[in-house]
Length: 236
Image 1 (cartoon, rainbow, N blue to C red):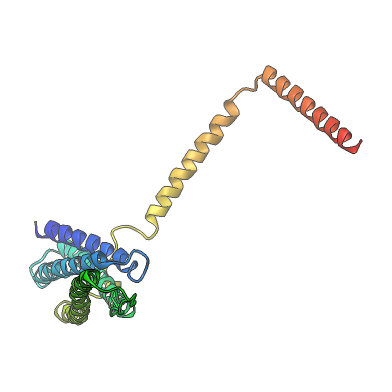
Image 2 (image 1 turned 60 degrees about the vertical axis):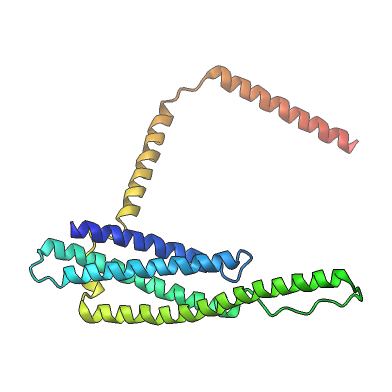
């Protein structure tokens, strides 16, 4: 039961980490926006929560000396996959921190162009500018606070990785995979070869229709004659 729970949590962590990776790739691009930065914040927080829970469950299981050999091998495979997810998450968080600092969403407002218009319209413009300044300041505060929070979280994920290696010693090169390397490619190639073989076997069994062959020959002759006639007309 614990193994299935760890698999489910690791699967959720893997999907969340992949989602965060794709979101980070759009920072600084044409799709970058305030909504994207907020979605990045929510996704990485969810990933960190899943990482803490999954790491705690796997640590308890692997430190159990009474664990069966088969179960231990499975938990070690889950541990290696979990370590890979954490490495990717840490790298993407560092990338998001660098891109967020290099491409801030909001810059200080420039003063409006003075048109010389006075009166009620200038008061309306002043109120609009004031509202815009407040909105801009709030968004700017979010960017600054989010970058500081992201910087702290990057350090926390790095400490989590170091703490994992201290509590559980599972070298990645000692964990055996459940299937041989390239098994999926070999299976797909064998399926493709079998399908090609089926086609090659079926093709010789198709009989040639003499009437269709004669019609094709006559059509080719007529086409060649038309081309020769067209060339002669062009020369004349």
